Length: 126
Image 1 (tube, rainbow, N blue to C red):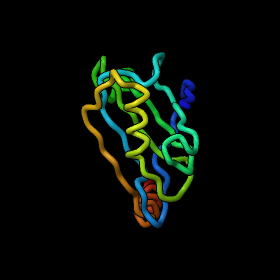
Image 2 (cartoon, rainbow, N blue to C red; image 1 turned 180 degrees about the vertical axis):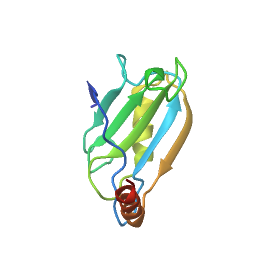
Image 3 (cartoon, rainbow, N blue to C red; image 1 turned 30 degrees about the vertical axis):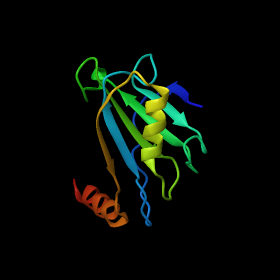
Image 4 (cartoon, one colour; image 1 turned 90 degrees about the vertical axis):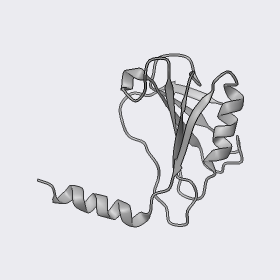
Protein backbone atom coordinates (compact mmCIF):
# COMPACT_ATOMS: atom_id res chain seq x y z
CA UNK A 1 0.00 0.00 0.00
CA UNK A 2 0.89 3.65 0.07
CA UNK A 3 2.80 5.03 3.01
CA UNK A 4 3.05 8.78 3.48
CA UNK A 5 4.90 11.09 5.77
CA UNK A 6 5.51 14.81 5.77
CA UNK A 7 8.85 15.61 4.21
CA UNK A 8 10.98 18.33 5.76
CA UNK A 9 14.03 19.66 3.96
CA UNK A 10 15.73 18.90 0.69
CA UNK A 11 17.49 15.97 -0.82
CA UNK A 12 16.19 13.48 -3.28
CA UNK A 13 16.09 13.31 -6.99
CA UNK A 14 16.93 10.54 -9.35
CA UNK A 15 19.62 7.99 -8.73
CA UNK A 16 22.42 7.63 -11.25
CA UNK A 17 23.09 4.22 -12.80
CA UNK A 18 24.72 2.68 -15.81
CA UNK A 19 22.42 0.24 -17.51
CA UNK A 20 19.42 2.43 -17.98
CA UNK A 21 15.87 2.34 -16.81
CA UNK A 22 13.76 5.37 -16.09
CA UNK A 23 15.48 7.08 -13.19
CA UNK A 24 13.09 9.88 -12.40
CA UNK A 25 9.86 11.37 -13.49
CA UNK A 26 6.83 13.29 -12.48
CA UNK A 27 3.65 14.92 -13.48
CA UNK A 28 1.52 17.97 -13.02
CA UNK A 29 -1.85 17.13 -11.52
CA UNK A 30 -5.01 18.94 -10.43
CA UNK A 31 -5.42 17.32 -7.02
CA UNK A 32 -3.40 15.80 -4.20
CA UNK A 33 -2.30 12.20 -3.94
CA UNK A 34 -2.19 12.59 -0.16
CA UNK A 35 -4.22 15.23 1.67
CA UNK A 36 -2.34 17.41 4.11
CA UNK A 37 0.43 19.93 4.17
CA UNK A 38 2.94 19.85 1.36
CA UNK A 39 5.52 18.74 0.66
CA UNK A 40 4.52 15.13 1.29
CA UNK A 41 6.76 12.12 0.73
CA UNK A 42 4.86 8.93 -0.16
CA UNK A 43 6.52 5.54 -0.53
CA UNK A 44 5.51 2.74 -2.90
CA UNK A 45 6.98 -0.40 -1.30
CA UNK A 46 8.75 -3.04 -3.40
CA UNK A 47 6.28 -5.17 -5.33
CA UNK A 48 3.45 -2.62 -5.26
CA UNK A 49 3.65 -2.02 -9.02
CA UNK A 50 6.16 -4.60 -10.22
CA UNK A 51 9.02 -2.60 -8.73
CA UNK A 52 12.02 -4.21 -7.02
CA UNK A 53 13.02 -1.04 -5.17
CA UNK A 54 10.98 1.33 -3.08
CA UNK A 55 9.70 4.23 -5.20
CA UNK A 56 9.52 7.61 -3.55
CA UNK A 57 6.81 10.07 -4.55
CA UNK A 58 7.30 13.69 -3.55
CA UNK A 59 4.11 15.75 -3.77
CA UNK A 60 4.71 19.50 -4.10
CA UNK A 61 2.20 22.35 -4.19
CA UNK A 62 2.06 26.14 -4.60
CA UNK A 63 3.88 26.68 -1.28
CA UNK A 64 7.05 25.36 -2.92
CA UNK A 65 6.53 27.70 -5.90
CA UNK A 66 6.54 24.90 -8.49
CA UNK A 67 2.91 25.28 -9.55
CA UNK A 68 -0.15 27.50 -9.07
CA UNK A 69 -2.49 27.16 -6.07
CA UNK A 70 -4.81 24.19 -6.55
CA UNK A 71 -2.25 22.29 -8.64
CA UNK A 72 0.36 19.77 -7.55
CA UNK A 73 3.54 18.18 -8.90
CA UNK A 74 4.44 14.56 -8.22
CA UNK A 75 8.14 13.71 -8.51
CA UNK A 76 8.97 9.97 -8.61
CA UNK A 77 12.30 8.18 -8.21
CA UNK A 78 13.49 4.73 -7.09
CA UNK A 79 15.61 4.53 -3.94
CA UNK A 80 18.05 1.97 -5.38
CA UNK A 81 20.13 1.82 -8.55
CA UNK A 82 18.97 -0.39 -11.39
CA UNK A 83 16.23 -0.43 -13.99
CA UNK A 84 12.84 0.74 -12.80
CA UNK A 85 9.73 1.39 -14.87
CA UNK A 86 8.22 4.48 -13.30
CA UNK A 87 5.31 4.38 -15.75
CA UNK A 88 3.87 1.47 -13.75
CA UNK A 89 4.24 3.55 -10.58
CA UNK A 90 2.38 6.44 -12.19
CA UNK A 91 -0.40 4.06 -13.26
CA UNK A 92 -0.69 2.89 -9.64
CA UNK A 93 -0.85 6.50 -8.42
CA UNK A 94 -3.67 7.14 -10.88
CA UNK A 95 -5.56 4.18 -9.36
CA UNK A 96 -4.92 5.41 -5.81
CA UNK A 97 -6.16 8.92 -6.65
CA UNK A 98 -8.86 8.32 -9.29
CA UNK A 99 -10.33 11.83 -9.03
CA UNK A 100 -6.99 13.45 -9.86
CA UNK A 101 -6.31 14.37 -13.48
CA UNK A 102 -2.71 14.08 -14.65
CA UNK A 103 -2.09 17.11 -16.88
CA UNK A 104 1.47 16.37 -17.96
CA UNK A 105 4.14 13.70 -17.42
CA UNK A 106 7.90 13.65 -17.97
CA UNK A 107 10.43 10.87 -17.40
CA UNK A 108 14.19 11.13 -17.57
CA UNK A 109 17.45 9.24 -17.27
CA UNK A 110 20.79 10.59 -16.17
CA UNK A 111 24.05 9.30 -17.62
CA UNK A 112 26.92 8.53 -15.23
CA UNK A 113 29.32 10.91 -16.98
CA UNK A 114 26.94 13.84 -16.51
CA UNK A 115 27.18 13.39 -12.75
CA UNK A 116 30.98 13.50 -12.89
CA UNK A 117 30.89 16.61 -15.10
CA UNK A 118 28.43 18.37 -12.78
CA UNK A 119 30.54 17.50 -9.73
CA UNK A 120 33.70 18.77 -11.42
CA UNK A 121 31.99 22.02 -12.43
CA UNK A 122 30.67 22.56 -8.91
CA UNK A 123 34.11 21.89 -7.40
CA UNK A 124 35.74 24.40 -9.79
CA UNK A 125 33.51 27.28 -8.65
CA UNK A 126 34.92 29.59 -5.96
